[in-house]
Length: 498
Image (cartoon, rainbow, N blue to C red; front, side, top):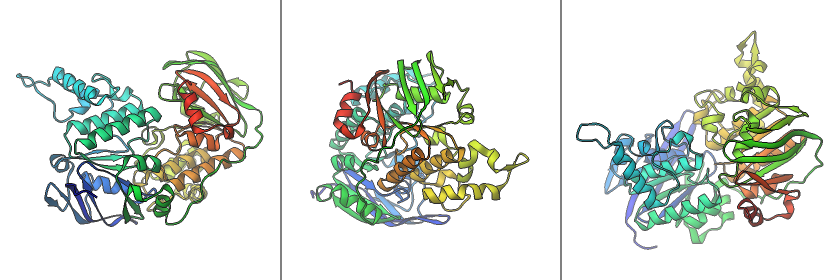
């Protein structure tokens, strides 16, 4: 390895939470011009370590060295001052502000009269956007942007701070194929400028293509740092979980039942035009499409979050137009969104309450929640999904991303909904949890549920879908009746209009 400049050194960092040793004497180094990947199963300590480096959490023991100075702990302000910028999995943005206002937040330029210089903010943000070839505009309101473009804003904000060390926590989790390619080009551009990038992701294939070195965490410990060229995907997975995991294969298909949901000539603001398809009982119907394809708009119109402009949706043969997600749940249709922290879960609540929230009448007596009844009701789901938490009343926000995703699935099971509408259900989870979720979905299907599944992971669609409908620029362009006969490359070509 070349004698690169050490930008960041993490020295014997330990961190505990009630009931959990999140990090146990973890050390690593980050060099200038290096992409250093940090991987591990859900709950391994990756996000905790990133937050300590960024100053959002304080370590119990250990130190951090950057720029030749050693710190017992950092604060967010001090971390930014010494050249560390973080882009978290849960983006730290203000949705009601514009892109430019978010980029300059706390460092707004002023006019000679002491007022915020909006013209300068827009101009400088526009120059940054042009420099890095982003698809956003300075005047866009962040809350109205898709998740993928909000990720661009978060990264742009970090770049504006002229960071020497960039911490990227699941940077491609919300991105589709072409956007991932763009992200890799941007990372390579930053690397060549001498920026050190600590890259956290569950996508091992992309790590092997973008990183120079890889550190593996397991149960809060560093089990090794490896040159990318010296390891394989199978080796890394085994080091992450401590044992060998069998390669996942397609699940056996079973005959589907009658039609449960019918979409007829649907048109929705956002680009969806004249889309028709059927969802049958005991079926997983995959939705495949790139950004702007209309897949998310279709799910949201069925869930009652968007009003169709034209067309009709039928549920068990009757017109279905819910007045929102609560009304849809009452009629047996549950929506599980991609952005679970913003739309799917109430993070300050104990995680059992998130499971029961959509059907509280199951755990109440005379209108009052009975805690003992609630715990008894959720225990089977905690056990079957292997939800790991510090305690039964732990707040949902302290759970790892994978365990939060399991809580959302437990909520779906608890509601007894017959139809599930899913957006990227395995986003941000490790290999083992991904397989667990796939098994759960197959069991739910075999138990009589019907699932409409959008996933940006084409391999996932091909593995668990009974059929796949392909969307391109708001129209349905292809229906795949036998996913086992289609490759990921062929499905990608379809989604891109080929």
